[in-house]
Length: 431
Image (cartoon, rainbow, N blue to C red; front, side, top):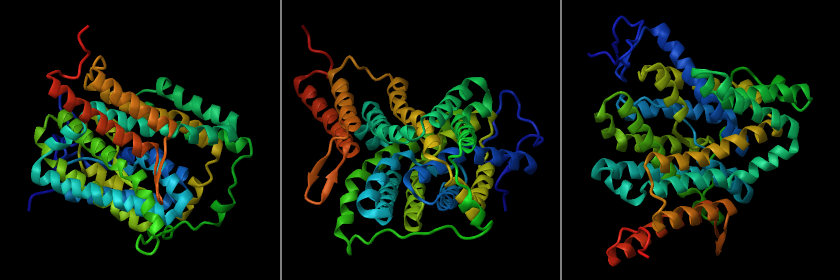
C-alpha cells in the first residue's frame, strides 16, 4: 500500500526554488509544528463568527475540525485547505436569530450547505464554465463587497459600547500588519483581539465567572435546525441565506486556483467539483449540530505561501487539534468572555476587509469600469447592500444582501444581452 505522503527531500529542508506539494511531507515533528501554525491562522477568524452571531464557539470549532477532515477525504487528500467559519453567514444568521431564533438560522445554514453540495455535483458532471458565465468578476466582486459593507452598522453598534477598548483593538489590528513580518503579520486580527482583550481586562470589562465553572473536557452545546414543516415562518430566512452560496462558490474556486498556481499543479483545478461538494456537506453537518457554515480559508493560504509547504498532512493535524479544542467547554467559555468593545474594534477592520476583497476581485481581473454595464452592475448592487434595502413578500423578507445579489446578476446579464442585440460590447456610447 502506497503511503499517504512521500518524504520531501531529507524531510528537514525546503529548497529555495521548491515547494512541498500536497502529497509530500516533512518529518512529523515539523509537520506538527506546521499544523499548529494553521490552527493559529484559522483560530481568530473561526471563533469570531460564533461570538458575533451568538452561536457556541466550541461547537463551531468542533465542526470546523470535522469539516476539514471530511474535505480532505472527499478531495482525495490532494487539496490542502482548512474549513473555517465563513463571514458571509454573519448577516443572515443575525437576521434569522432575531426573527426565528437559532433554529431558523441553522435551517438557513443547512439549506446553503445542501445547495452548495448540489452545485458541486453539477460541476463534477458539467464542468465549471457555467459558474464563470453566471458570475463574471464584476458580479462576484460586487456580491462579496456588498456582504462586507452591509455589516457596517453591526460594527458601529459594538464600537459605541466601549469606544476606548474598540479603538485600542482597531489600532492593534492595523499596526500589527506593518510592525511584524511573515506569520505574525498575517495574524493581525488575532493579535488585535488579544491586545484589545488585555485592555478590556484592565478596564474591568471582562467577566470570568463562567470560565471558572466550565469543565476542561466535555461535549459542546449542540442544537438542531428548526423544522420548516412545523414552523412555516422558517422559510422566510432563506432569501437572506441563499446569496451566501454564490460567495462560497467564489471563495472555493479562488482557493483552488491559488493552490494550483502556487504549486504549479494545474490538475488541482479538476478538484473544484469535489471541493464544492465537500464544503457543502461540511456546512450541512454544521447546520445539523449547531455550528457555523464553513468555507476554505485565505488565512491558511497565506501560511502556505509564506512557508511553501502545501502538504495536506498539516491540515489533518490542524483539523484534529480543532476537534480537541471543541471538546473543551472551558475554551468555549473563555472565547465567550470577549467583550463588545473588542468585537467593535476588530469588526470595523474585518468587515471593511471583506468588502475590499470584492474590490480586489475587480482589480485582479482588470474589470473595465469605463463600461456602463460594469458601472451599473457594481454601483446598484453596492448601494442596495450597504443601505440594506428590504422587500417584504408575505412572510418572506428579502434583505439588502439578497436584493443586491439579485441586482448584480440581473443587471449584468440584462445589460449585456441588450448590448449584444445592439451590436456593442456594453462600453460607452459613441459621442
